[in-house]
Length: 206
Image (cartoon, rainbow, N blue to C red; front, side, top):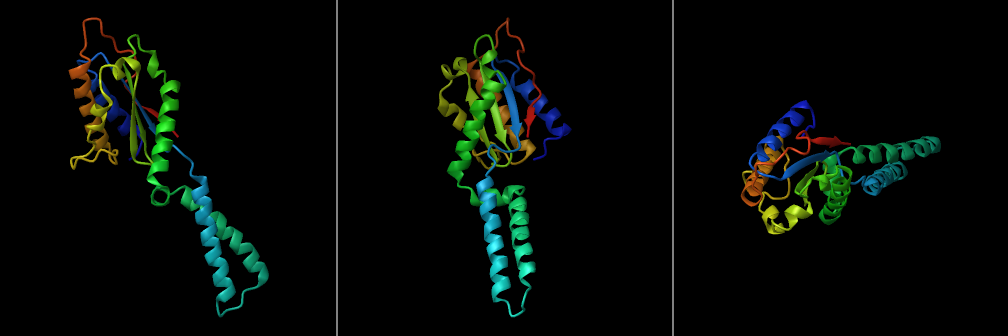
């Protein structure tokens, strides 16, 4: 999923529509990743460097010691760099539980940073999407938490196949926002004094 201008404009329209008829406020934050997972990348680099070293030691061809001394750390650095910048590699090696904890921790931080708690009736809802982990965390403010049970948020399905883990494409994210809007309209309807208290455009962070 690319967080380009099309992404921003599409999500802005989806949020505006989802807020129609509800007193709740949606704040969407899209982050490139929630954790660095540098240790995983370094482990991948070390593994690749070990393979290079073993090949140099066991190959029938004789390598000069200076070549081995230079190429082994270079192989480590290159493999670690590539692993750190390749989401598919990190998703394959980072435990799902660790990724979920990273997403939830980052969402809690952004809840404060984006002042989701700043609405007059405490009816803000943070929709935090972490692209590397392909996961979403929904963090409601007190005004929503007291009126909408947590089980309602687990019913949001981000894809046509019923996947609740998180969107992988823009249309899946829009689908989830639409479902969130339906929940909010049913549980937190708008009144005559309702105002749009937060920007509809998503906040994109690296």
